[in-house]
Image (cartoon, rainbow, N blue to C red; front, side):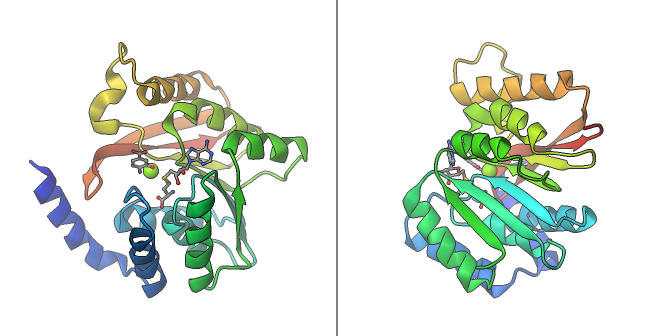
Amino acid sequence: MNDKLWNEVDVYIGRLVEQEDALRAALVESAKAGLPPIHVSPAQGKLLMLLAQVQRARSILEIGTLGAYSTIWLARGLDPDGRLLTLEFNREYAHVARRNVARAGLGTVVDIRVGPATDTLRQLIRESHPPFDLIFIDADKASYADYLEASLQLSRTGTLIIADNVIRKGAIIDAQSTDANIRGMRRFFERLQNEPRISATAIQTVGSKGYDGFAIALVTSG
Ligand code: SAH
Ligand code: DHB
Ligand code: MG
């Protein structure tokens, strides 16, 4: 088993995914603008869209926009008249993301809020923002436990919380790790385990993004 084979299989799976032009363009324009290629894969993006559809999502929160590739996938899964709010602290990335979102015809559906996610989340909680139907956590890995905490405060019974990059080539099981990202991710897992309001799992993945994985958590009581 190797990365080359995983990548070839992801290309094969890509035939199922039917990626629209605006999504392809978002990747091309993000690369041109020098954004790091750390967006979800097409197969993962389609999963996000399907989960939004299953969830009948009318409001989605995304933490970590980059060039809005995952944003566009998620927004495509929204119910008619649904809205998506996405948080990004890098002004240049947000600028690229806005162009990509506009090209996808989602300018009035997607709201990109620039600033440290923790600040924006605190503001949303303070303003008693109505609960989101789906929350996608994909920003700095060290803060995932904090993002989960804030997400719970912006959730209702039935909210689906998805977190990307929770396996990190298996590094997640290293209890001695001094890496802030791994330590943060382990705090996130502990929080998931100890939170009675949540029912959760994590799935390991291989593919064009290497060896990683995602967590899915359902808020089972408010
Ligand atoms: N969801 C995107 C990828 C996001 S990459 C996709 O799959 O297409 C992670 C993003 O989180 C980066 O753009 C980074 O700038 C942003 N980020 C990192 N730390 C942040 C913070 N504290 N607040 C807000 N955004 C942050
Ligand atoms: C990184 C971040 C991501 O969201 C991702 O999917 C892959 C890598 C990173 O910061 O390295
Ligand atoms: Mg990610």
